[in-house]
Image 1 (cartoon, helix red, strand yellow):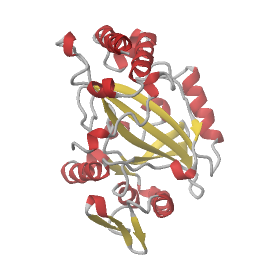
Image 2 (tube, helix red, strand yellow):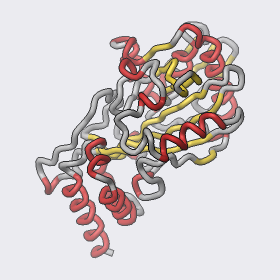
Image 3 (tube, one colour):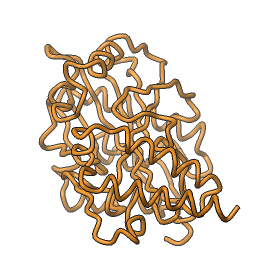
Image 4 (spheres, one colour):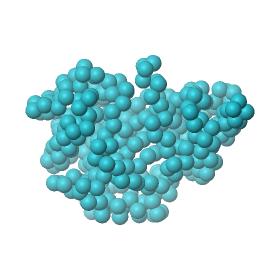
Length: 305
């Protein structure tokens, strides 16, 4: 993965451009809906492994979602054909992905699962119900500290029960209004980030960052970025979430062209988190050590200029 490791810091919400525990949705163009990068082959291979080894943990769908799943597949195929012809060869019976050494037939599997095997993103369907939108179908291979088995069928409020400042707060109210008012054709994007102890893609459980060696605190940690998009399906009216995972090794931060500003922005974000937010992100015992390490990086680079 040497070549892949050279691709970092594509999205940097942790530098202060996006605030944690806020909605932070912005319009995005159709051509930028889905992403491909040098990790395409390895991400798809990991999806294959997870579907083979733990299928019920990464894919679930209610029976009456078949039409909505087909809508998703059609959207994905159209998008890949129009904007990703360099990586995906879309034809009448399927998709060929040369970089990943695979050919996918449109009719082989449930439509949402088929679509998920073509792209790096996870795909989640939310449907309006009595208690708000609820999770009715998902191909979720790369969760960030949550389990599809535990959340499947739940409403947005129940899914986010443990998220600080969501239920009963401005963020939860804004999300509910946004879901109700989202129009077909609108395409929105937001980012979320956390610090993780490794670059594993499948992370269904809660994590906690411990700092054993303060001198090497950044050496083995990763900034995990979720790029999320949402859009309303024109036929079913369901809302489709896509979630793309990016991993930025904190050890590589010092080689970033704008390292000092990124490190400073991340330090400010860490310091602004409440105790409840720090605990949710697994950083309540390591925040101060991380901030000190980031400040050392900034100071070292400032003095070397």
